[in-house]
Image 1: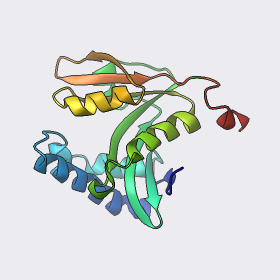
Image 2: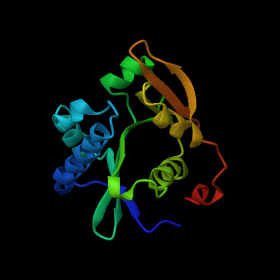
Image 3: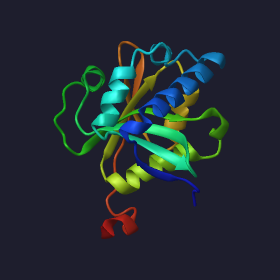
Image 4: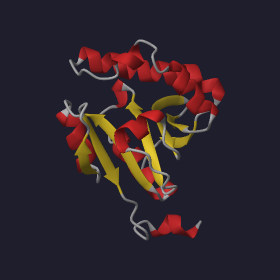
Length: 173
């Protein structure tokens, strides 16, 4: 169905992943979407580098070009604890920094990435996003995530439970 491959990012690709995230952050800013400003200013560079080093960051490639990235933590980060409270459940993945390069947006890549996570990793997925971006909130709901609540500091909490047996081909592994 897709013409790209999803795999873990390598340390050699760190600069490219950070550049992609900053490209998306700049696109958000230019689109009057108040989001990822801290990332644009370099505020998450070290966390991004560490996530790649820890094999928690993935990329989607078309030919040799990285067109999308996302990070999945199997243990809560400090931010996840802030948003969700402490939770030791090992059946939960925390999704961060899902981004698609602007020239590849509106082609279903984000939806395919979310489906790939569900089909291949077989765990509940949690994420948060700013509540003042209704298009993004609607996007996650349209892609099977349930709104669990909103934090006092304005972040929507979304969760998608993995449905056992839904994707029978991946159960053969």
